[in-house]
Length: 112
Length: 121
Image 1: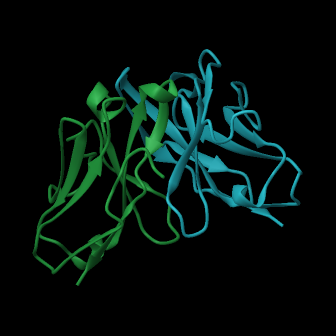
Image 2 (image 1 turned 180 degrees about the vertical axis):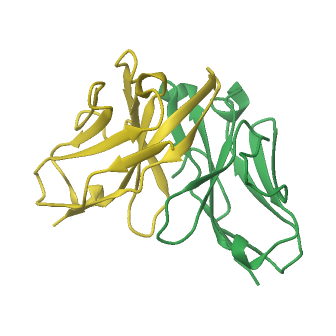
C-alpha cells in the first residue's frame, strides 16, 4: 500500500486532456513537501517530468502541468499524444517517516 | 554531461548480500545527495534510502532498515548500496538518482542511473 495514492490507470483519446491524481495526507503533501512527477516507459529509466509541484524541466512540453491543493496533487496532460502512453509516478517526502521519500503506486496512461 | 553510471547485473542466492555502485560524473559529487530507488518486476517505484554525499548523513526506508547500508567514496565519486540477507522480494532493478536540493521541503531526483538488476534465486 503506497503512502501516496494514484489511480492504477487512466485513458484518453489523442487530443484529449487527462488528469492523474495523487492523494496524500497531512504528513506529506499537506505538510508542505513539494510533489514531483516522473514518467517511465516500459523497460526504461524514470524521467523527471514536473518538480516542485508545478515546474517543468527544460525539454518537457507545456502540455504537462502539475498542481497541488491541500493534501493532493494532480498532473494534467493536455492535447494527448500517442507517445505519452507510459507510467506516471508522483513522489514526495513524509514527516511520519522522518522525511523519507515516498512514491505513489503509479498510473498507467493509455492513449486510445 | 551529468551522468550516473551503475554497476552490472547481479545474481545472488537467498540469504546472500549484494553491493552495487553508482559512479557520478559531470558535477561536484559532494554537493548533491544520492537516492536509491528500486522497482520489482511489474511493480512501481519504491524509495530505498539516500545519502548526503557531503556530510555522510543517511536515511533508509523502514522496509529495508537493518539490512541496507548506503555509503559513499568521495574520492571515487561513487555511492554504494549494500543489501544483506537477500529475500526473493528484494529482486528488482535498483536505480540511483541525484537529489537536486532547493529547500528542505523541495528536493527532487533529477538525474537517474541506468539501473542495476538484482536477481535473487
